[in-house]
Image (cartoon, rainbow, N blue to C red; front, top):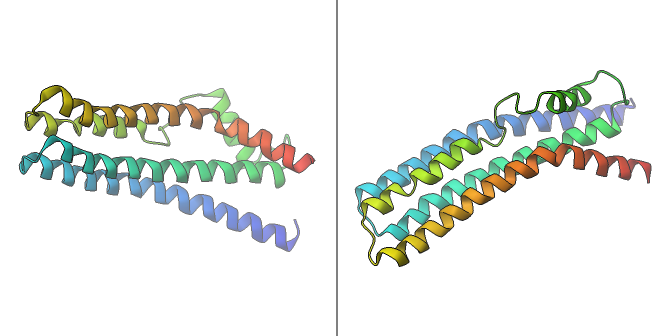
Length: 176
């Protein structure tokens, strides 16, 4: 590697490390903020529509985690294509082979089960407030919750195929 390539490689590996660490502490910080807001909406017996405030914090936290994960994976594929030789036993090639050979063999990198659980629990203050008129308020409150759950599911599916897609795209870029 040239000195410039070595510097770029080092910066990219550092970026992966920093974003990976950031993702791990953002989850508990976001869940603590969400829990505080959810408890406040339950204790203060606010209108059910106010449960959308903690839901927004929860969704923003998930989007942050998803963006960090996507960025880390994309940088990894860039390193794999532009810095690693095919067939070598290097980190990115090995990480991709591990994921291919042992699907679901680790922690969910998006923490989606925790976000899904929190999304469902976020409805508790709305139920405690006994919404009136029942049907209209449940639609206004329930629909965003369902949309968040659908987004979590779609994001997990997209994340599962992202490595292969990014690898193919970077290989096309390198070969063009």
